[in-house]
Image (cartoon, rainbow, N blue to C red; front, side, top):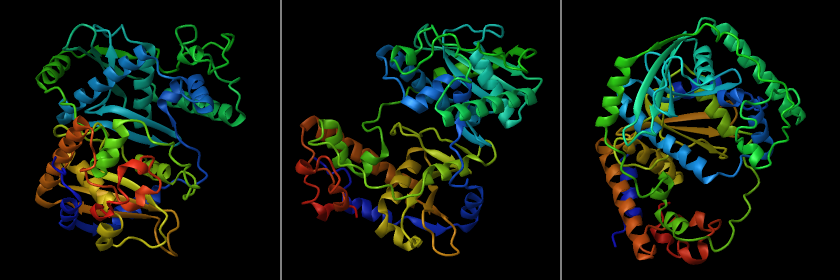
Length: 455
């Protein structure tokens, strides 16, 4: 069995990666960082259904129901495929934050675009109210007077029917005010751990999964949902020419080829990936160590990236078979965010030795989307006196990233062969520092095989 690009091959790849400290983008991110005590953002989805959002924060999400989960996964698959087919139309899965509200827009083309899957044939007057409210919210938060609602009718066959409707909103201010009202109400309910001030959700009595799972205390006597202001005079226009063009592009696109591994970490640590998917752990993983970082360091950096211009942070579609894990772009380049408890900043020349997994992760992500350069954002919990908590390293891959692409394919093939043979011993070993907390350490052999470690 081939070793799928062992430790030596990866080390050689990393030696050829070029790194440059980039203080200007680091300063830009640091200037946007929220205060440590700033509350977490509430999503537009939270504000469309404040009661389910309250119970989810308080009691967790309901266990997945097989039928509902299959429909959701099918919808996610079509979203990914549509995003890849529409890559030339604009930025896909755009993330942004305005004040304490976060959004994830399916597509930013000439207007904000929201994509839904469901029954085909929804024309301008046959749109679900919650879909209109969601698009209106995105338009208000991005200060765009109109948006586009796309429905992929997936129930009629293999090729979905595409319906496109443009919506023009006359009073963005009223919509923004309603979002702020809902945000205040939900934050107050969460602070008091009481949902009394929240209106009844529209799904009560209609198969609400929170009621089915016994996670909510709703009784149906709560106040009726109020009408959204600013939506009484929405102008709706069917865009049949766009629907035809997008349907043709979607039909001409190749169906994504399933990749052997779902996450990039399995390509970096293939032996652990093998054991994670070949059977249960020998023992429960040990309790995580005491939190090393101040509250929400990673979330604060994510919020800082989201605070930029709309479209600056978005998902990149894969350039071929690749893990399903998303690859984010910031200011046009693939971006990887990592946090560090180190008191001394990493010099570019030290990253290969002290944090090779960061370079490997970013390199594999760049290769997956056909990019040859990316940005590594390091957030330091305890920066030295006078030092910024943010460091940005600009990374350039050798030979346009093609060696990383070959490494990914070789390692995926090796993992697939190991799973078929029931033997992962010839896969590259994990670094010795991972063995102490590995739930498979009694049988993986990585600690004894430390000479093949990537670190």
